[in-house]
Length: 375
Image (tube, rainbow, N blue to C red):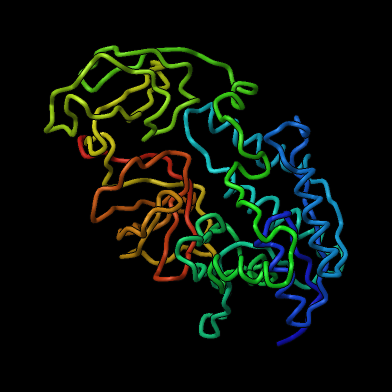
């Protein structure tokens, strides 16, 4: 294998730490970069960037590699966070990790790494890259650990980005990564995985959004049109949400519609025109189930859309691949998916990501969906 100068994004977590170790073991010249991408309330209990940098620096010391602290906060605010707020203001539920990967980790970071003389970059993502000699294109593959696969978040990467990217831990299971980290004495071997918003941390979400979005209370209505509560603003809810609705006292006895006396309430629809939040009882209410969706702003790893036909898709992370039929993608980057089985809580703003077996083909942002009760 050719030896390269590889710049690794060291986050302070165990996955990127083991990534750097594996690359050094393979004989590459490894340099670490810690990305600081959030400056607001940086001393907040929920924002751990200071501790993360200390952890990353301790890893670099153990591995004997250089580490540079780079600030991409301005790029993050302009390219990711502004779009994040625009989507929430419009009543959609964006996925900031998808945009963060495309705009920061594999654009701003990649550009900076190239200026440092990097031939390749690497991150601790659970995914793989393979060069297909038949098509002369790089393919994005699922990580070998199905419980940790992160190809969903990486589906917007293009050929130029994939050609320069290495994902060493994508070949491993998480248990093996932890074992390796402990074996070589990494100081963060037992560090808990981060589950918060990309670079913003694990904080109370509604309280966080409250700082940036206006609250506009309105009615919560059930499937019969009865007002059953008040919402604090449509931006603060997502389809399929069960907690935090504050609904009580009204029961829908229509079990044929997925409800029942004691069935929980779920957010099913948001009407921005009337500022109404619609909630239904029962996990399998028809309003929560969709057979088809339209997505836009498509990004395809091969540089062109796959041909129409049978594929598989995820409409949210950690979802099982669902069989679907892709209709042709148009010039505007819009495409349509029809599923063999109804999908639960398909959410505008989230990503619909397409797969052909283990190969991630790309995807787009869900714009609309067709519920079982819609004509």
